Image (cartoon, rainbow, N blue to C red; front, side):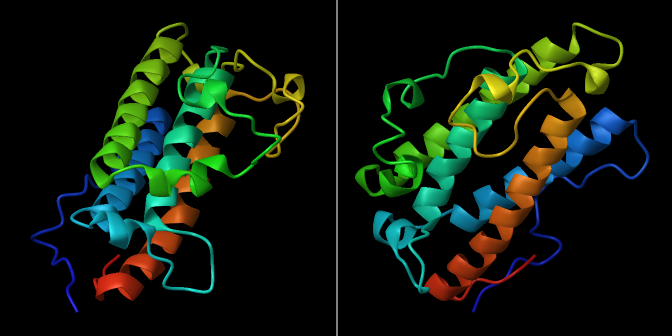
Length: 190
């Protein structure tokens, strides 16, 4: 069983004395780094393994989080149309396409897709935040009430809600990643 020692833990610690935006982004980046750590070094077979009585895989989790990044930062926050490949998916046919299609992607494709989505989200946040002195109070560009397929919430929201939701999304999936990774190769750690 392997585990990461505090000296080996390269995840960025959230700041303990910072403004609200920096604190929220710090926690989000810590959780993103946890997902990267939990999926690092695994083969395609390991990323697609279902060691628990669940359909969830670490590969599916990476692809799902790539979608979530695009959905909340590009589509909702800035009001842009979904990026590829999300724009061509028949979500009515398979509402869990992001999870279910991950087996068709190599580990490199999944990691690259997710890392690219994270980087794009950071850029989108910077674009949004540059528009105002108080970005967390800024209303998002697209109300989820406009999206009949939005399962998460309905109506208008501010950017604070989006960032807090992203932290919640990642925190929940980091728990899944902990269990899945330990079941695959015994790796443990926060």
